[in-house]
Image (cartoon, rainbow, N blue to C red):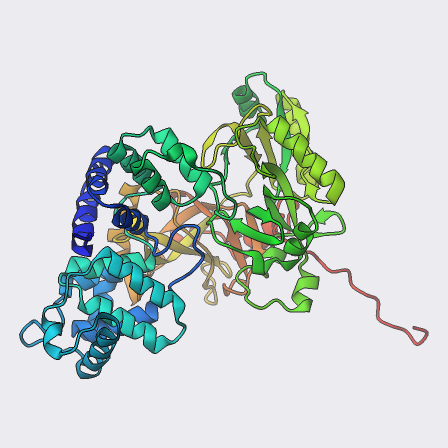
Length: 599
């Protein structure tokens, strides 16, 4: 019998109910073990929050507004009441499960647009399921995981909104419980919120089929799709997996060091490579023939945003996988990050935008070359092969110095800062590439700007385990001296890291008590709480009335000892923005002299 969505929901609810990873793994492992190959593949895929395999670039093309439109016509609630329920529940799926009634089966259930939706559903089901009468709607077949997969294929295949609406209506009306409806929405939005991350799924597969976890992890690194890995594990065929390009892998990460002395102590007398820490976006480039894909740290494709990078990579012969950084770049130097921001998220790039904000890719690692996986080779060997590619192609690569003492680290760090880079990354030349790991093989050293005392002006519900608490805080500084009648608070950023769960709970209770207005998930609050905020850079921004934004802000501490009138003013932000330590300043264009009669 095919696996059903109801069973899937029950298993994942059980996994979500425990905070113990071993128990989550056992629950999922037992479930996976009992499934056939087709359902097993789908169960793992959906449990990871994906509608399609990781290497499948299709998207459902279903936005929040369409799901809202469909669900509001089914639940029979006032839209404002349902909206408030979604805010309290943290997501539409959980809200839906609390008010769910199988369509046209509950007494007195009169949803908006019911008659129109009923005709849409009947027509769709007649076309796709062979259902002929209204009576069959009262006893729909139990929704299987395979039904979801087929419907997702149809959603991805059409761009017609009414067709997408009909498919969603059909799926939801076939849900016989609120938990089915909840998990349908969770999968559509790619967030199950069960605490089952990729590592837990890998371990569950290892438990289910009695395989070493390291073997599961390596197989996923090679093929990219965990739903394919689980089938190989079931069939005792993990060793046949071969590396494939065009699936993003996790980036190796560096551990932060506060000072050169601490970094030298961590290195324990060994000689490390020192590279400039570039201020761009981390990217990996996959190339095979003329096919090129660029992935960011969020595992998203970003080729269309950087056509000049794609064009340059296309000139390099061979198949390879590069790790590096996309940076604003002109005349041999890295430009301020503001140039890159103007390119991010743009679907249409004008010639002016491309010329004003030129980009380049600077490589610092080579992970695959012409059929050979190099991740387990030492960095020294990978670097040598990368330099050979660069010498013959013009590929930009990071320069490296060798350091072993605190003085050498400090000198290299100062030189990197003089080149307008964030700092340095120290790398053990004998280290292999460990995707997703943050160990002692790579270390990073960078300085921060002075901290600012800011006033919280808004608090927002968070995501994941923080979806029911106010954990995201918008903060501001004063436009003038706080006692000036004209003074007002000007927002300069939003932060959500740096506070403990206990502090968040305390702030949530406080902000709810001093809220002035609620706008969706956001509460505008009375200006009473002061936060000490750190940031890497300050940039000019049209988003805030202040005209400035702190980049990568982090909450250092809650200043319970300070009153709002003791917070910083915009003059302090401008002062630090203009300082030599702030590399977020926009590049100043050289002013051209006014033409004369002789020009």
